[in-house]
Image 1 (cartoon, rainbow, N blue to C red):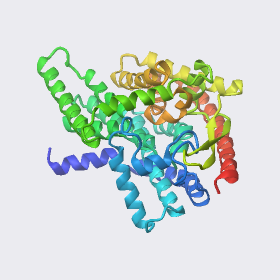
Image 2 (cartoon, rainbow, N blue to C red; image 1 turned 135 degrees about the horizontal axis):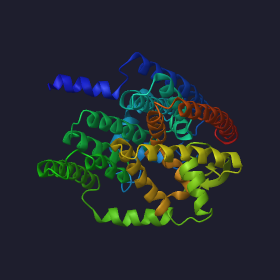
Image 3 (cartoon, rainbow, N blue to C red; image 1 turned 90 degrees about the vertical axis):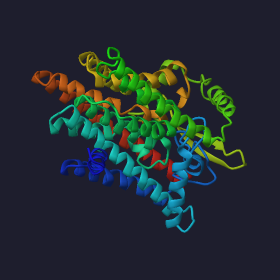
Length: 424
C-alpha cells in the first residue's frame, strides 16, 4: 500500500467520511458548543489562574493547561498542552481572558463531538447496526455526564476518551479484515494514550492477546513480542527524557499519589462504586459545595458530586448495568467484546479494588465510559433475528434516554446556578 493510500485510510478512519457521520459531528458541535460558549464567555470556571484544581468535580483545568499535569500520571501530556496553550495565547495576544476560555471550550467540544462520531462508526461499520439503532445509542450516550462535562473541560480525560475510542475502532477494523495491529499503530497509541494517562498504556496491548494463531504459531508470537517491545521502549525513553532520567522520582511520586487518593473512607465503598465510578459518569447526582483554597491564600467554592439520594437513580444504573452484563454474556465468544471488557477490568482494578481515586471516580469516565454504547450495540446485534426482544430493548432504551435527558438537564441547570453565584 502506498503512502498516499495509508494517509487516505488514516483520515477516513479518524474523521467523518460520510454525510451521515458529518451530520452527527455538526449536530454535537452545535449542541455542546452552545453550552461551552455560554460558560466560557460568561463565567471564569473553565480557566481561572488562581484555581489550579477542584473548581468543579475535581478537574484540574488550570494545572493541566499550564503543565500537562503531574508527570507520574500524565508523563507526556506536558508537550501537548504546552503547544495548545501557546497556540491559543497567540490568538488572545497573551491574555488569559474570556477568549482564551472560549477557545479551550471549543477544542474540547471538537474532541468530544469527534469521539461521538467514532462511536457511530463503531456501531454502524463494525457492528453493522441499522441506522435507527445506531443513532439511538449515540444520542443516549451523548447525554452521559462525562460527555457533557468534558465537552467544555480542558483535561487529559477529554483527549484520552477520543483516543481510546479511535483505537478500539481501529482494532475492530483490523480484526474484521484478519490483519495484525501494526507496530507503528502500537507505538503511536502507546505514546498518545499512555502519555496522557500512564495507567491506560497497558490497554493498547490487550487486542494482541486475541490475534489469530498467536499462541500456536511461534513466528506470529515472536513478531507480536517484538512489536510490543518496540512500543514499550519508545514510551519508556520518552517518559524518562521527560523527567531527565531521574526514574526514582516516579516511584516516590506514585506512592505519594496513591496514599493521597486511596485512603478516603467518608462514604461506604459500595456506594462510591455505584454512585461515583459507575453512576456518576452517566447520571449526574446532586451536588455538594465545599470551600477550598489554592495553598496561596485564595479561597474559592468548589462543586462535588454526592451519592445518589433517590431509588430511581439506583434503579436506572442497575438496569443499564444489567443490559451491559446481558450483552457480555450473549457475546462472550466475541473477541472485540472481550477486548473492551478486559480494558474495563483495568479501571475496575485501579479504582474499585485498589480504590485509587474512588471517592472522585466520576472524573475518570474518559478512560472507560465508551464501553457502554459499544456493548449496547453488541446486545442489539445478538438479537437481530429476535424482533420481540429488539422491541423490548428499544423501548427500554428510549425510556432511559428520556429520564437521562431530564435528570442531566436539571443538574446542569443547578451547575449554572452555582456558576452564577461564585464564578461570574
